[in-house]
Image 1 (cartoon, each protein chain N blue to C red):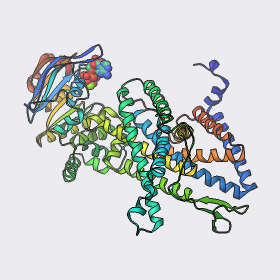
Image 2 (cartoon, rainbow over the protein chains, first blue to last red):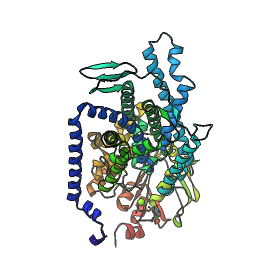
Image 3 (cartoon, rainbow over the protein chains, first blue to last red):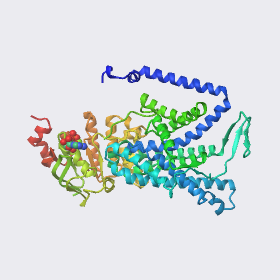
Image 4 (cartoon, rainbow over the protein chains, first blue to last red):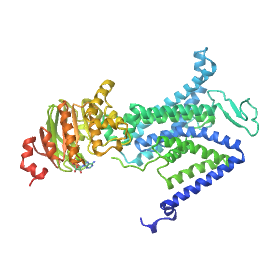
Amino acid sequence: MNNEQLTLLQRIIKGKWIGKGFLALLALAVIWWVGGKALQSPPLFFQQIINGIQLGFVYALIALGYTMVYGIVRLINFAHGDVFMFGAFVSFFSVSQFQLHLWPIKALPSLPPALGIVIGTLSVILLSMVSCAILAMTIERIAYKPLRDAPRISALITAIGVSFFLEYFGALPFVFTPNFITYKRPFDIVTWYIQGGIHRLEAGAEAPPGSVIFSNVLIIIIVVSILLLVGLNYIVRQTKIGKAMRATAYDKPTSRLMGINVDGVISTTFAIGASLAGAAGVLYATAYPQVVFWMGIIPGLKAFVAAVLGGIGSIPGAFVGALIMGQAEVLSAGYISTPMRDAVAFTILILVLLIRPTGIFGEPEREKA
Amino acid sequence: MLLEVKDLNVYYGAIHALQGISFYLNEGEIVTLIGANGAGKSTTLNTISGILRPRSGQVFFEGKDITFTPAEEIVRLGVCQSPEGRKIFATLTVMENLEMGAYTQNNKEEIQKNLERVFRSFPRLKERQNQLGGTLSGGEQQMLAIGRALMSRPRLLLLDEPSMGLSPILVEEIFNIIQEINAQGTSILLVEQNAQMALSVAHRGYVLETGKIVLEGDSNDLLHNPMVAKAYLGAH
Ligand SMILES: Nc1ncnc2c1ncn2[C@@H]1O[C@H](COP(=O)(O)OP(=O)(O)OP(=O)(O)O)[C@@H](O)[C@H]1O
Ligand SMILES: [Mg+2]
């Protein structure tokens, strides 16, 4: 392509210094704007940051599944958001119908109640994780594996088809129904406010003006997410299967020559990504206590943007991208208007694709045999 | 016979890459497969390794038909390949690359012993064990590729062009190590374009030309065969 044929935008992006200058200006504008808001009302600002962290961690758990699956089979698994939805529903049923969260208290009455609640909640999360892993392995086996050697676009279209299937199967009246359902948390919510120290906020009471509030939901999200991230990092860095995942992501034929069961490794990758999405589903539902069959679409897309922003295929990238997305969304919802949060999320996607398609941590695509 | 290949026909779509080749390898031997670019050498090794499937013909390892055995099972049976172009996992450390070679092995002590054996053959890998595979020099990558294959404790080692892109001194060094590995009891099927070098270490050899075996015999005989000399040894 010669210079005459480039559009103005392409020329701006091609001229690297213009692109960089544009980025720097954009960054300055964002800092100036956010900084201004922060100075205007620090408590409000901190409140937004806390909300953004909560959201960002949930996105991180979802984004990891996108990025891991992409890393190993080069597929944007559009059904991933629906696996997240499935995880939320599994926990809904296990709590509302089967009282799974109460088993420690029933089985071991001598246990301190607080510990019982913690173990019960973790059991609920674990059940969702396992269910999602099984679902994803089934999807992979039935829908994606037969297309392993087909052009990438076939698998991509299939992923969209699987996504629709999960959503509309879920919408059936005897499955999840098409309605919003109120989610019952496996624990009671406790809220604190910060104003010259941390104080417990009694149920129904108003927090004093100028204070920052947070709840045990935030703590659970952060603690569970960090535990899962540390666990994931351990698996990927230290274990045999984790190393095989990295080898397979890098070069499948050579992995097979070394005796690595590549299909098994791919299946495990789907399972791990889905279990993280399952945990995210439970955490998301405890934070925003409603479930509905399409609830995975928007968080799924946002997490996808986070993965692209971080550099798809990169695990640290997915984490960093998700934290940025969480903040961007909450700040734009809080300071501009609520609908703006989706616009901002997708604006970020477009900007990343235009300016740095490989994302923050991404490397340029290496063609593989 | 450790390995027997019978009337193998392999296609890439319409391309008939292997046109009915047969050969064998006895326990303890180094057998070399020489031939020009595109003769079908790598295709042969990949068919033995189970990552390519023949349209007809058979591969036997220790008398067992492994023609359609899954690739990972073939490694477990004792056949491992060091592929053309080394194919190091660049994003894994040297140590992790070696561990991937030992993927089919479960006995920790055996793996450790084997690792020490590989480090004895390639001391440079030990020094660089925590470095990323992609940062090694070409020669070191070749050592890693061979070491990685050895980590599976193969009875039969398949080597695809170990001399590719290496300086003459390094080629000499690598071929010495290949002979040592063989002396310690591993049979070797060696694919090479460097016919001189390959025939000097091998017991027997086969000459492959556009998917067919056109000559076979003891290495010494092949070295002195006028046709081989003309086509592959650069003699006039
Ligand atoms: N993936 C492929 N698709 C189509 N044709 C292929 C493929 N791989 C190899 N071929 C063809 O099959 C024939 C044999 O190739 P092969 O790689 O086995 O040759 P080789 O003897 O290993 O050559 P070299 O010394 O260059 O490595 C060649 O004609 C090649 O073009
Ligand atoms: Mg070759």
